[in-house]
Image 1 (cartoon, one colour):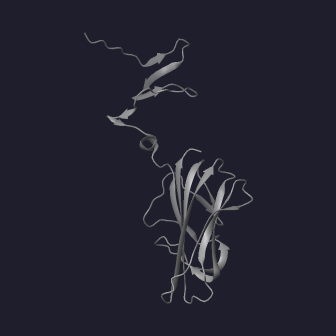
Image 2 (cartoon, helix red, strand yellow):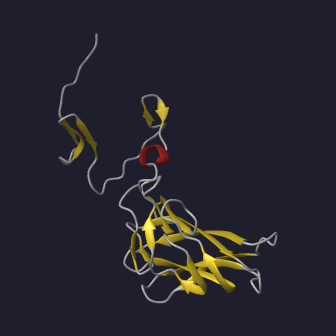
Image 3 (cartoon, helix red, strand yellow):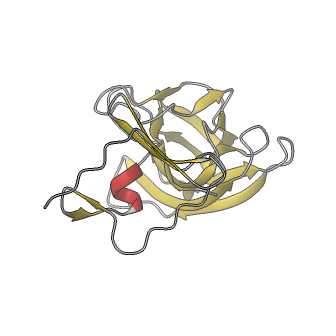
Length: 208
């Protein structure tokens, strides 16, 4: 004989809801509760993991939009979100005068690529850049640095370098980043409105 129990709510002995069904939504536990699952949590027969449940909740990509002739400076203008081949995931980063603010706390992967060229090698021994971060919305420190020598096979001379860091954003009001380009002599740091040249990528990997 098959038994069927029909209820909308199951409570504990203190009258607190353990399981509740409303409009085809099943709620297990309440705010502040710990739900301990013994065994494997599945979705239609496939095991769930954090990536399956949440996926990437924040991913954004920015770039320098035009060439910048410099030997060393922070990127403070001519920055835009990649609107050519990618729509950002989540709320996206906020940029003001080259300072980037994070949309939510978490552990972020920051990928910075620097491209440059020059018509004469001259005294240009290297070119690259830095990722600089603050945790108090004031003092910035170098968190990642990359430099590379030039291609000496003929004019124009090209430089390209890349650096990646993990940044633990525990407070979106105080934890911010900005980007520096530098060279041993003046070069043209490459920008574009249609492709990624000198560019920044932000991916939230998980909770802080």
